[in-house]
Image (cartoon, rainbow, N blue to C red; front, side, top):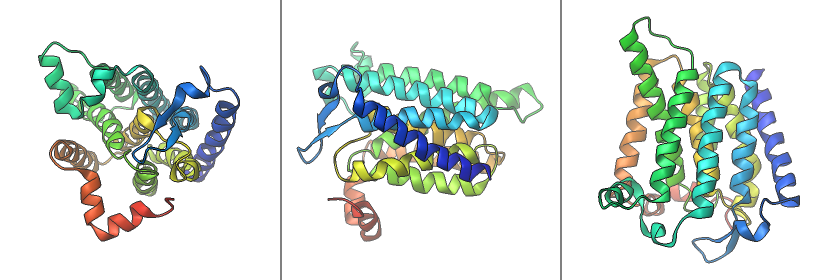
Length: 273
């Protein structure tokens, strides 16, 4: 069964990537250390392991897997650049509106550069996906929608990476739904679920965190799985949700909403120390 095989591949790839990175962390382990929301020291190597595992695990899913590998690999690499090179002033620039405002003032943030690069990778991934429409205009619309889904999903999942395990839980729930929905993207979604599930324990224990590196890569993979689905209604609805939540995040704190909604709060707290 392709979906089960992809999920197991995701688990295996995440375990192997974690073992290798813990043994030989690029640039040394201290380079990846950060302080989380609770002032505890965590390692961004968990995010690098997720990005690496997801990129490798999706390669077994044919043409859609190749597109997902491009999307996840690009998003993960640019996320790592942002994680490692973010300038002091850029830390206080948050959200899409913040980065665009900085651009209007002539200040190019690392986050803005990352968004532009992820957008380019998302467009390339969308071009790699099989076209369904017979008309040129229809194909252009498909490419545009696909790129928006990939880039938007990469950014949206990163917005959930504010508490231990939260973004990984979102990945597991959304990815499981996409895997069950079938279509060419189902194995890609299953691979992302496997990788995310393998990283949950360390993330929940606050030993590691995803950072932009892991969250952007996982989100891009899920976005590619969405873009590959044959249902125009599903793709359009998913894009509306992604855009709507992204715009909402500019005005509303996801953490506050989750904390004030008992069922969401219970799921968010599950497994945390």
